[in-house]
Image (cartoon, rainbow, N blue to C red; front, side, top):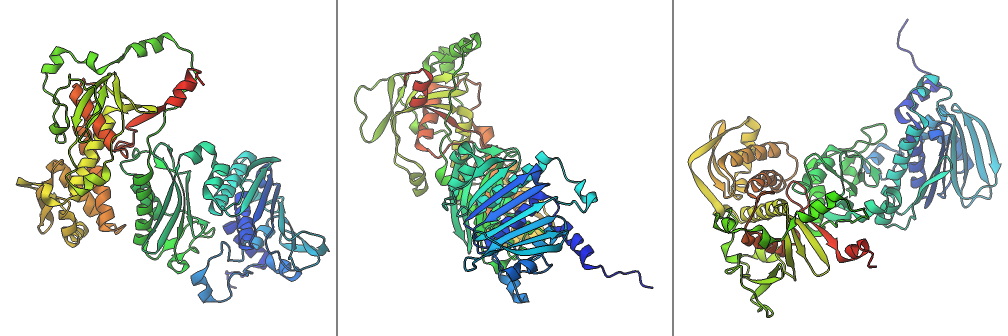
Length: 617
């Protein structure tokens, strides 16, 4: 007698239920997706005891006929596909036809539904997958599904559920993600009688983020939109001061469906290079839109993981959209003041605040000024002690230091790149320094507190990036070539992209198993250039993103290490000339808001917040 058994329908349904339904959150997910596919404009999700004892999902969608209600809880019953080619163009959220069958198999299920053209609605009651009753009822248009006593008929599975509070949080996370994916659908979530959130459904994603994730979170989001190689990316990303220690706030959607993708996550986080620390993670609500034929969402029972036919274009699309948004829309963070009671420690801190002039002694003036490759003597004042009582001429601008006006010549930009990145400088006045680390600068309606090391680091970093983009003119030849060992695939990658890499300033000759670096960009040591070449070869061999994207990521990581070494050091006394030059550069480059390691270069204290602090308003 054979040992392979053909399972009966009831046992098969229980196994299918384990694949699709493993906790209340998965039940809510399937029911909400069905509601969205039915064209619902309003969805209400209510749970009790974490959803274990009670789940109700109501919608105002198209509803079902009496005949369809009975069929809906059968396995492989679906209105989404009929033949095999339909799988190549799936645009709905649910399509397998297993969700309701799986839910019905492990619970007491009630479905109340009505189509707009029907005079009466239908109520169907099912227990453990068996239909007990189907009757006509008075009902509004749409569908309401009530799930009670989840896993009551499978005690072994029920004991693996977590505490009610934990299951409730999991349900809330699911409802949040679906609400964020569909800003045009009003979603209301109720847990144990308390309304967790209620979105407007007005189609504006930022309003949905506000309702779901909170006011403060929404205020620190930056709009990101882009279209690259047929990949559309829309949504919002977090500003560099709105980051987390984990990826829980990364909400990624593909064609309106929440997904997890290593490719998309890598593109998102690589785009934040030089904006946030390496151990922190950005937040986002991004929807990626591509043709359904280029993605397989049926590789995981819950359709959470997806497979792309071309990972490279997905990476490039996300990276470009996020990076462009950061480059164009980053503002200096505002320092918020709070009411406090002054203590002796506060007095000590206030006394530590000194002006620039008071901080410089005759001995300091005799010291050799700190030299770095980006010092520009022509931008430093010729006479730091002179004053100017009249308005500056158009060819120059005046920087005020401790009440004195220091005339600083501003020469025309020498290249198109510089003229595009620098903006005219408005009034500012250097008030003083504190702890040899922070510079205080008064603007028209605010005060900047500048971290001199972070600011100088970013200025050097941007200058080196500009130099590299200009090409090999800024390379310096090595008397003794630096040799780098390569694997076979790294050798192939460097050979394929040799001309593009050498355009950045690193020139090399490929040997059988090595590369000999003969020239390096100014600003990098030979050791750093060797590290860059190896990292670039590895990135290109992964076949993730284009050569330009890989080049930018790898070079930025190397450049911000080099810029850190060359920058002014916090805690060291600096000349007044260096301080004036640093402030001048920062004012001319308003986009310099974060250092390459992700720390703010300056905080802004508005006049309004100061007046509120001192109760003037």
